[in-house]
Image 1 (tube, helix red, strand yellow):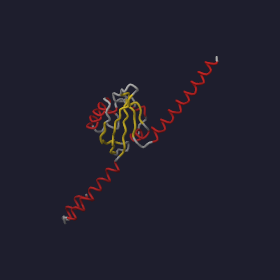
Image 2 (cartoon, one colour):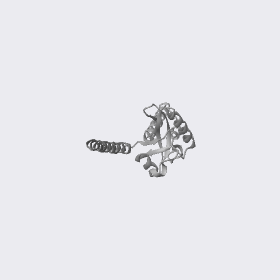
Image 3 (cartoon, one colour):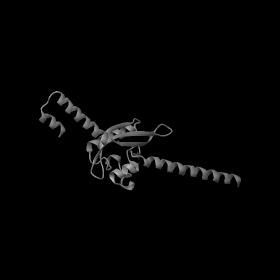
Image 4 (cartoon, one colour):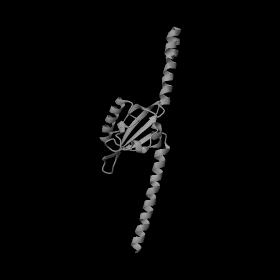
Length: 171
């Protein structure tokens, strides 16, 4: 009697703590502007966060269970799909991988993404999940390109380049 009551009380405490932990994890996973997901070691999409889903205007059930390389984030660029397959193999072997890619958003715009794929290990040291992470770096790349053009213009001006040459760098 008493032992069973203590066991049930402890089970209720553990269940409540687990639910609280899940709520906290979902809050962190979905409150960031970073594109996040969870893959199995073969590269099948198990979970995607709100930012990633919003970018492609998809519901989770539309993309979960798909090979990650075949999802809408990657389908517009076959070379990136192949590079992603390589990254999945590398991460599945236990080594993080990453590269710069583009994703086509629901509004048709391409965004430049700094993409990383992280292996997640279990207690035995085996890869049990892969964590894809993408940071939109479009604005940074645009500023870098503008800075490059500005520097080129100043260089041309400093060397008395003819106006038509300077204008071709701007346009």
